[in-house]
Image (cartoon, rainbow, N blue to C red):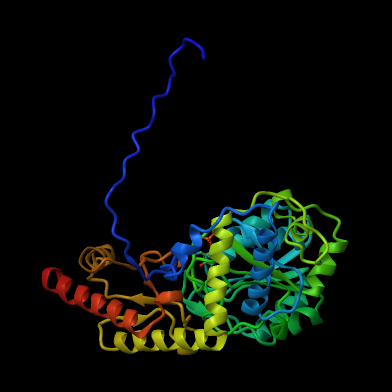
Amino acid sequence: MSGNSLTVSPARIVDREFKQPLLCGPGPANYWPAMNDALTKWVISPMDDEYFWVLQDIRAGLQYAFQTSSPLVLAVSGAGHSGMETVISNLLGRGEKLLIASRGIWDERACSMATRYGITPIVHSTAMTSTFSLSELEEQLKVHRPAALFITHGDSSTGSVQHLPGLGDLCHQYGALLIVDTVVSLVAVPFEMDRWGADAVYTSLQKGLSGPAGITPVAFSARAEEKIKNRKHEPPFYFDMKLLAQQWNCYGDTRSYHHTLSPPLLWALRCSLQELCREGLEQSWARHTAATARFHQRLQTMPVTFLIPKPEDRLVTVTTVVIPKEYDQLAVLKHIRDKYNIVIFRGLGPTVGVALRIGLMGVNATLQVADQVADALEDALLTLKKGKL
Ligand code: PMP
């Protein structure tokens, strides 16, 4: 030890009071009750067979969740953005064209990532309150002949859901791959990767799967796999699917080290997939639909409007609610948090200052939670009206 005293003293890290709120924003959602046990299970390492069993369980669960029989399915270490980074950087290289169907903030993020990799983004936008028709996307594919199309299935910044069946075939007809963000839609809204011809897909654990953020499922089709095998460019080392596929033993013949996977997050993802497989996808879709239908029915009796005018474009997991201008949006959020310990969110990207974002997803997609949030919102609108209007 040197005789010099340290120049930085120990930090004062003290515990504070915090009561876990009911999380009814666009994510994260609360955890499944089994999650606390999952997060404190054994520390597993590549020296244990159990580690590889867990990876195998996760891959099988993900094939079910995405509805794909592709072998190139695994989870990358990082939040949802790492999935976006992985699909874009593995499939496209410098100078290739990525057509971006843009209606919210996630498509903007995809555009900014593509630009950093030297990929040429071509942005086709629609109003934040609507979605794309297949014919307009076909026109764009025909004109630009991109290497891939990026589209967001459920957009948590606007509260809309994009109709996808048929889009995969269209992309393939024009030589493009289809990349889909299913971060806030998977397991809540029907999605069938193989049947719909999606080529690269990612989701997150903290939304419909009701687990912690930090590990992100991705899946690639046979077409995408072929592109990865023959690509001329190198993606970032950390997100390289060729290396990750070896670590995750995607082809049944490798058990290699790439980076240290987080044991609690592996157990957490496995736990969410176990919950999903017990319930069944169709039942999960139906539960989300029923909870949100109840919430929407309750909204009809309040002085609010839906940001998304067409009911068929409304996302099941996130509802964007416009409240009259006379209300202070932040006061509404604060009232709901202070009195009910429920968290709902303000707008994001194009919806900042325009709409509130209220989410029912994962373990919170129940009639009971729908009523709890509706009661809280109703009370906030009544209470704040007395004082303000
Ligand atoms: N895509 C969508 C649709 C999202 O809702 C989010 C997160 N809200 C992301 C991507 C990014 O995910 P993360 O914050 O986990 O990086």
